[in-house]
Length: 466
Ligand code: 5AD
Ligand code: SF4
Image (cartoon, rainbow, N blue to C red; front, side, top):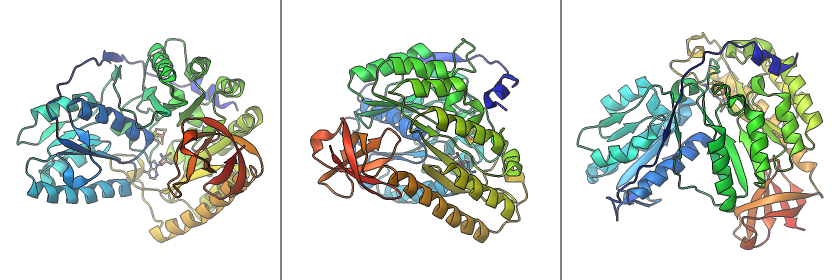
């Protein structure tokens, strides 16, 4: 069966999307004051933090990496798994302590956690020292909330929104690689996932605005853009304007920006046209992140993933066949409610079949409000942990195998920064998103250079500039 055919049969409810331009000016009322911003979670949050940074700096704040120095602390939270939430609440304890010594300190929480009504209730009751609670749909209101902040807790969370903001301003972390939101939210409702509740329904930006942003970034000298969406390849379905993700990807490729990638794709929306565009344009990176989640058809059904293993394999093989030297990475969850030994074995088997270049692996974490959270689960945590360990060993062996294939070869690397481990080295990524540590000078940063691979480990490569 051809996966994309399934999409045609899908019944979609059309909805009106309102587009809002953001052209507000901000007064630098907080000159001399400092902000501390901490980001948890996925690339979407990382990019949202670039928007938050813009607002804070427009208000006059300057950045500090020392919590104690801050006049405002912003925690951009994640709710995808329980441990992400625990980290935020752990950090809040430190903030509370600081606030006792410094009553004027503003503490602000935003991100996915604050989109969950039960968490907002907990914050209101048990963490009344938090000054501002804002959601994922209305970040643009943050400057106003900061200015208006009174002694009372200031809560501004929208449970859902049909709005798409264009012309959002960002203070980007990098001058080399840029994130570009192309679609917001998710309509897939995988039964374990909180995202459709915290990020709302799928809403696409208009193609002309995205292309404008890419062209602007190219002019500024950016080498790479990552098209972002919780379900990036569902792009355009809500617009009904006659274009889809493949059309957009091709138009972005035509701008001539040196490197383009996109995350995260759902197998259900992966079309033949997308594969054609990836293989046709040299500047579309041969890198596909294609979450499989489980190797068992039974579990996939319970997860509401909308594909079978046979369909995933067919798509996987098509991509491998048509896109030269492609790297395919994935996400896998172990310990979904009542996952049997056989289900888990099926997951190990699909990993052996696909030999993924890399995989992000997780133990299932029940999220309040999702369908799976109501499912009975008899599997002890010790079994889940054992499965994760076994899976990681297998996944790492294939990462090493795929890295070793590059030994002695010369590959193009976009150099992004000084190496964390060794200040005399720089590091960057191949067009298949493999991390390479390079013996070379800082002058290479921002350039795409040919690098000969001299050593290969599970998580990184070593190389020298050719
Ligand atoms: N428990 C564990 N992992 C999860 N993911 C999403 N929700 C959960 C959950 N409740 C994983 C999926 C997804 C990735 C971003 O996080 O594998 O692809
Ligand atoms: Fe979550 Fe599934 Fe949507 Fe991905 S596709 S964001 S896992 S609901």
